[in-house]
Image (cartoon, rainbow, N blue to C red):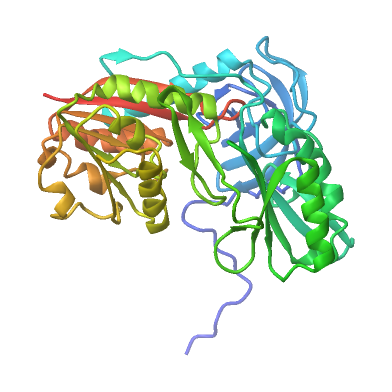
Length: 450
C-alpha cells in the first residue's frame, strides 16, 4: 500500500477563501443607497455592507456587528460627510436601542422609503402596479405608541436588574428612562419603572413588563415565581400612584389584581368599545388604526344587504365597524381565546349580525359551514407570513371585492400573484405608517374581480 502523503494542503476548487471580518472591526465606507429596511448599502472588496444609521451619499465609519459570506452587517459609529437629509436623532438612545432605526431621516423621507419598498415588492414579485396609489395614512411621528413590552433581566454577575429595550443587533438591554414614541400617559411610568422593580425581593424571577394605554392604563408584570406580600404591595402602590391597573402573569393567562376592572380601547368614529387583555394582539397606533379601519370600509364599500367575510379578525377591530353597515359579518380567527373575546365584544356593543369562528388559516380553506353561502366582499389582515393558503380559495367564495391589510409587503406581493391568477385586479394600494421612526411597512390593497 502506498505510504500516505502528509503535510500537503489543497485549495478548494473555488480558490482561496477570503478571511472573515471580525466583529467590532471599524471600516470607513461610502454609502451608495438605502436598502428596503432603511440601512445604508456600501460595497468594498467584493463584500456588501448593510450599515444601520447611514444614509445614501454619506461617508461613515461603521463597526461590524456580524459577517457571513460576502455580507457584512454593521452600524454607524461616526459620520464624516453627512447627507443633506440627515437630521439629529430626536431620541437620546438612538443607535443603541433597537426600536427606532430610521429616526435620523425626516418623517416625509421615511414615508417615501416605505412607499418605494411597497412599490418595489409589487413590481418585482408580482409584476403589477395598482391602478391608483393612495396617499400614505399617517399620524403624529412621536407619542403614538400605546403598547410596549419592556425587557427585564437579572444580571447575576453584576448583581443588578436590567430594565429597558433590546439593543440594536444584540440581546443586550439598553436602559431607557424616556421613550419619545410612547403615548404621554405611559411616559412617567416608563421613567419610574426601573427604580420600582429594583425594590422587589426576587429580581431574578422577573420576566418582562407590558404597558398599555387605552380606556384605562395597565401595567402587566410577568413573573416566574410567586410574589411576596411585600412585593405585591410595592406593585400596587406604584400602579395606584400612576392610576394604572395592575395585571400579573404567572402560571396560566394574565389576570388583573382587581377582577372588577375593565380594560380595552375605543373606536370612536363608530362608538365602539372593545375589551382587551394584555397579550392580545392590538394595533399599537390608535390614530392610524382608526384611519385604517375607515379607509378599509371606504374601499370595500359594504352594502346593507351584503354578507362580508373578515379573516384573521382578532378582537373584532374590523368586524364590528363592518357589522354596522351590512346584513351579516362572518369573522374567522385562529386563536380560540380571541374568537371568544371578539364574540363578547360584538354582544357588548349590541351587534347581533356577527358570527365568529375558529379555524387554522395557515391551511387551505375547507368546506367550512360558514363559507358555504359565499360572500360579496372579503377583508383580511394576516400576520407577517401572509395568507397564501387562504387566498388560493377566495375566488370560489364569490367575492367581487377584497381588501388586504398587510404587515409585510413581501408576502402581500406573493399573495398578489395568486389573486391576479384568480382574476382579481389590483385597483388601489397605499402604505399605513403604523410605526413612525422605524422601517416597518404596513400596507392596504384593494382587489376587484375582473
